[in-house]
Image (cartoon, rainbow, N blue to C red):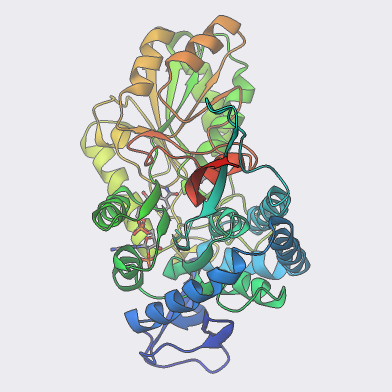
Length: 490
Ligand SMILES: NC(=O)C1=CN([C@@H]2O[C@H](COP(=O)(O)OP(=O)(O)OC[C@H]3O[C@@H](n4cnc5c(N)ncnc54)[C@H](OP(=O)(O)O)[C@@H]3O)[C@@H](O)[C@H]2O)C=CC1
Ligand SMILES: O=C(O)CCC(=O)C(=O)O
């Protein structure tokens, strides 16, 4: 909790029922810059359940009229929001980089992705939502339609401060739901700016609300709130399970996107330069803080040494620094907690007998000493049973695993509790198809990195990575609506 408020730093409010309001607690917390922990990016409300209740009640009321608008009218609002965000793209991206550390170029790309997602779902307002199904009664018309859930609670993480809230809110809204957003505290300023764009676009009061505050209060409040009909969550497995169990207990619908331990397989016949590029981009961009990040690099023995040499040569060239500096390739970890988690996994890797090939330390030059930086890190001699090969690290740490055959590679790739994304580098079509068939992951990619999803395609994981539903693309309709089967007889 910030006791002394710095006067030149802006305080962001909750947005409830179309108005910017302070929390009933009268308390704020500070959002700090992970590239320089002494810089406060903004203050955000440290809200209570009372604030959440007000937002849910506004959303419940507003949803009654919102659901009655045509899909096209709701789409028009989303187009307007997209235009507003596009008009503030640099400002929003800068806020993202300053709050969570990814490079400005990545933040701009993500903000543009948010704009594209909004436009995609705006268009969905004009597309079909049901089927005509022949009835056994020749005098009857039978068809399906879709109805919104009601009020949707969005619990969002800090690693994609714009794209994730938008890929949850845009489909919720287009199908007629009202939304209460609880962003991660670390990126609540960026989230508030996104909601400002909804406000500027003139959405009816109460249709979109934001309440900032600790996960244990506002997140838990969303889980338990009797008037929240659906909860969409991205974050850790621990909290995800709590969301699922709480929602199930009171009959609310829920959707969870959680961790990954994503492998890349490098086959003997791979284009090694391409594989190195994909491993670095997939594993280290955004400082490895993506659920789709590559963390296990499974390489066939006959190309292992050559691949390793090429990988280390490229990794050693990566420039670590503040995301706002143009020459920076990799920014800091998003928070001190996240940095400590990554450093503790590096220690575990060393203790378990993996060989540290590169990195593993906090860089302490060029002003990095005030930030939550860690060097890009590469281990070899990693055994699949080691903690660093099994648990999600969420940092820039690659674990090299040597195998003799591709069968062994796929077996190891599957030998984890997660199943989000996976990729293979190979030129052989037979290898590609056996990987596509055998790999237990919701997203399988060939000659492309494990990270990077396309907004028009379904996204989600198998095993412990998700609650088995899918987000994005047309798949989103399955979560944000219920099917109503209609039988009409004259
Ligand atoms: N799949 C993914 O994309 C992500 C995975 N992770 C994984 O999780 C690890 C921990 O990150 P962390 O930020 O702690 O993730 P969390 O799961 O704690 O945070 C995700 C969201 O859940 C909220 N939350 C926290 N506690 C509760 C609760 N009791 N009830 C409801 N909501 C809650 C958080 O709020 P608040 O921020 O206010 O605490 C945040 O909005 C990472 O190291 C990574 O492994 C993390 C983020 C994204
Ligand atoms: O790889 C991507 O673009 C999406 C990653 C993601 O959804 C996440 O990290 O939560």
